[in-house]
Image (tube, rainbow, N blue to C red):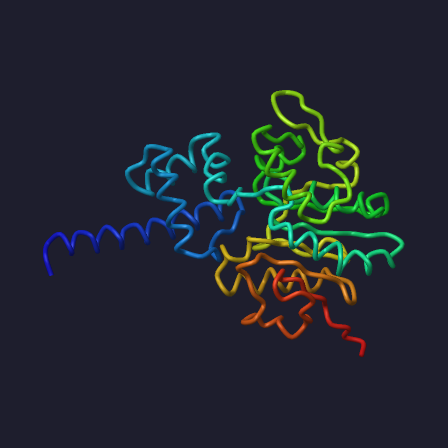
Amino acid sequence: MSVSDDHSRDDSQDFEIEMQLLIDAIYLKYHYDFRGYAEASLRRRLRTAMLRFSCKTLSQLQDKVLHEPGAFPALMDFLTVQVSDMFRDPAYFRALREKVVPMLRTYPSLKIWIAGCSTGEEAYSLAILLREEGLLERALIYATDINGHALQKAEAGIYGLERIAGFTESHRRSGAPASLSDYYTAAYGGAVFDKSLRRNIVFSDHSLATDSVFAEVQLVSCRNVLIYFNRELQDRALGLFREALCRKGFLGIGSKESLRYSTHADAFLELDREERLFQKRDQSL
């Protein structure tokens, strides 16, 4: 083995040690728990953050996070994934319309939990879908995330005009009976979504790593979040969803996610394999 190989291995080992120290420091000071996040994903995001903060080592980044106001909220934008679109994966929303909405109609009131809502695109998508299906007025959507900056953007409900064409096409492909333009106006250099949609959405801070269930709901939608967790944290999150869901409630997860290896897999029936929609088993039977 060459000297450069030894040096590379030492650098890698140092990075792993420093990453563990940084994650522990964040948990101890700010009470955000990234200890169960997939390590490969964390490594990539932290290396990107080091460039943004002009830090040569994670120890330098840790010093900023612990001692400089504003550093941690800025780092959160790197640690949490904020890639979302309205009606992302239109077939998923079509499946909700066709297979879940008919059963949601049977409830006098609805509670829905969008876990990992990021900047709110899925929350508004679901609110629009429910309005089109005549259910929004009796529904309350809990849209939760650990990133306060993302939640502020979500509450504002303003998205770049350059994104609207893509949103509109996905909305149409979801089986929508109306045009997306019915739900927003152009202002402030962007598309401002109707405030009446927000009346039925509660945006709130919630961590799948540390927090508990806060309500009984008929539907949980948590898409493209579990892939960033290790197996133990995935199980914790799925346990929360199982606990939150009412009898025969529904769970939607991301297209690259699965319940197959979870300890909670037997608690759910497959409703739509392709779109990753599940229904909680009736335990009373």
